[in-house]
Image (tube, rainbow, N blue to C red; front, side, top):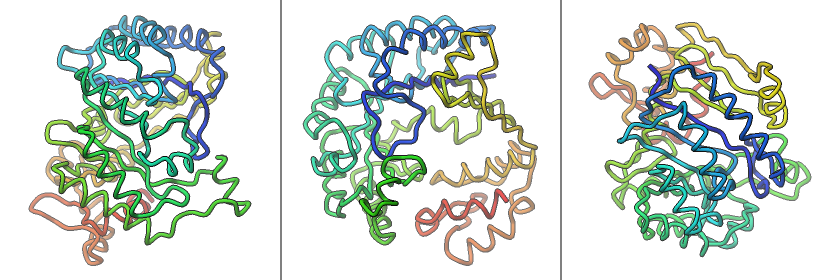
Amino acid sequence: MIRHAYVHVPFCRHRCGYCDFTLVAGRDDLIERYLDAVRREFGRVTEPLRLDTLYLGGGTPSHLGPEGLRRLFGLLLERLQPEPSAEVSLEANPLDVTPEFIAAAAECGVTRVSLGGQSLDASTLAALDRDHGPGDVRLAVERLLSAGFEVSLDLMTAAPGQSLAAVEADLAAAIALGVQHVSVYCLTWEQGTAFQSRRQKGLLQPAEESLERAMFEAAIDGLTAAGFEHYEVSNFARPGHRCRHNEAYWDCRPWEAFGPGAARFDGLTRITNHRSTTTWINRVLSGADASGDVDAMTAEAAARERLVVGLRRRAGVDRDAFRAASGYDLDQLAGPAIARWIVAGLAERDGPALRLTRAGLLVSDALWADVLA
């Protein structure tokens, strides 16, 4: 039974230089056709889904504005029906968080706002090509918390020219704001982005690896000392405020997804919609198949993926629960890799659980090929 759904809203005011997400900037002329297309795609659900979590991501869903948000929820609630206790998350840009927008979000049943702040330092925000300032982040958080929303704040490390002291100041500022959740992401240099182009021309330089690691460790130490649980590689929450929607992903539970670039999953097969917003709109409105990639995994491949996403969580993977969910024994599936990690101090066993150590977390992305190959 599917209890989780994602809706992708691909509109932004502008595209930041590091961004390779599925979005269009400065194309508000497409909003009407997007709403028509997503309404038709919701029709793929023959019976209304009773949801434990609903997540609206982007892009920038808040860019729709108060009335646009009301219209989108009016369409989706015909097929996607959150339970009274559901977590309903919405990604937002600080500049969009006006009193009118907050009223619309509350009316639509939003319970949690993920705020794309990235930093509370003016020079870092400028380096990241963001269109807001530190004061906008603070005001947005104050308004959201005062209105009773749960707030998650995104912070980015290893921005061009960013120092360790600047990261530590961002962490202290986020803690002082009183948000319940913080996601900390290291800047990645993706092909096709403006940042990668500038890097290839020698105009931007990535942070040294040792500095990246020091920044990540500062996040772990600073946030855990302030009472946050480090429950996934990049995510920290005050007790009782973990992102339930993301935990569904990490548990490999089935979910539905709608919109350009959105990926739905039934436990074995992941179907990703076409990434181009205009292509997706045209295909949906013409009645054509709007899917792009289809990843039909074998049971073993699904088990290997379950192991990888499970090890991203600080609790690690329980061998008995893993066998019950996947049908595979942990050591039979990846015994040699696990043994190497333990000898190298990158992983540890704690009773029936296998988890990465701090050293393993710092290099986790480099470990997954040992399991997925």
